[in-house]
Image (cartoon, rainbow, N blue to C red; front, side, top):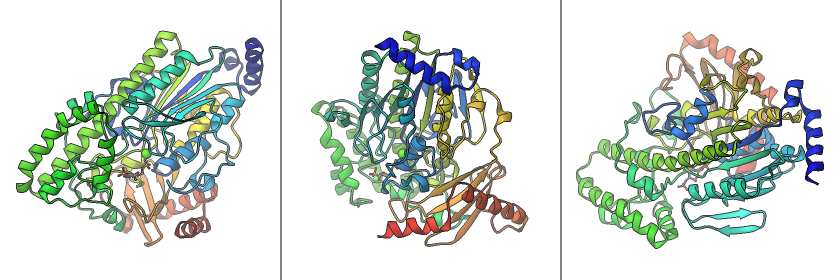
Length: 531
Ligand code: SGN
Ligand code: CA
């Protein structure tokens, strides 16, 4: 029976294959690793000023690092739906975390399953639906929890005690060891919740990271001059908009004692909910480290200036955010080691990415959403032995929109015509001359909503970024990416850039037509949102 299945599989794959050379090779396994809100600034292969991520770096050292990978809409569920469908948000419907996904859309795992791949998914999916085309899944409901998580599975909901990143690692390894079918290639999704807000590290990592001090970014005290109203009005400032309990990890009673008002109505609740989930042992570990931090804060708070308070909150944020990544990095190492041990490393493509980028204090911010670089760009590292040259960097503008077609192409499975991305397999092969994209399209919708980032769309080229903020404003911004990489001054009204603006507006209009986006659709989504 297995033999017949394998025969059928190979016939299917062979007919879909492109070159005779590929025909002779077994189809590659694919491991798609994605974490949630993992900023490229916090991966040492990109920059090691914050932390070391030796295991994630291995993927780049043995493969390719993309230095200009980006998303079409920098927010969780929309990005995930774009990855799965290879389509922009206005096509698949998941324009923000709230809107429903159009479930008639084909997602790429369905095509892998049909082509004979074994498929599995573990961790955080968060796009509002269970996955299709997945033989076995265990996914966190919604945003999921950092400790003692629940999972939705093919057989209903289960509860597992432990630290979520470690639990996801164990579920994945358990599948690899016990239920992977050696006669079939596999497509595995390894999806971490960390380092999503509210950044709760494992005890072994909060012990270590709360002792560290991190360099402040040059724009931590940004005054938002030189840009339009959107940057000024966004509610993402670490000092002003982070929760005191939920994010900075003050105990609610310490806030009361110091007379600190909650930032939001879920500020104290966020921390309380996290504490309530802990086992006695986890609670003891937590108090052992965060107790003294609270005690120390009680002493210094009364005499702190706003500037000192911002620095303190930034350190608190980084300690927990980066501490949460430490376990993600370890989990990547465990999986890579297992591939080596089993001899699976040779024929397995390993991808590491995040659903978007994130602000680590740049412009004084946390969170994402904006077309500005730290949230627009996303980490992307790919290892494909025998195909991708080890230790290479590629600076082409690939997008999460391209992932579906790329992985299908790599597996020799035909992609449907209506997918809107492009396979970047040529880049992975080192054939950059076969890639001619000069601009990408971006569209963010979730407004008015948490963090208050205004609706905007724009075009990004290697040199420039042109953005249109709309809905309650009609403002344009232009950034010269070469001269002003920190994006501190819009040149939109500078006459020296008049020609650039004109050209980019044409380009933007072309892209809106190319991807079937339009003012009518913008209005339709506003009307639906306001209903
Ligand atoms: C929660 C977070 C926000 C975050 C959104 C979306 N607040 O609402 O900070 O932007 O999720 O994140 S929290 O206090 O509840 O953590 S996303 O990754 O799902 O898009
Ligand atoms: Ca996210």
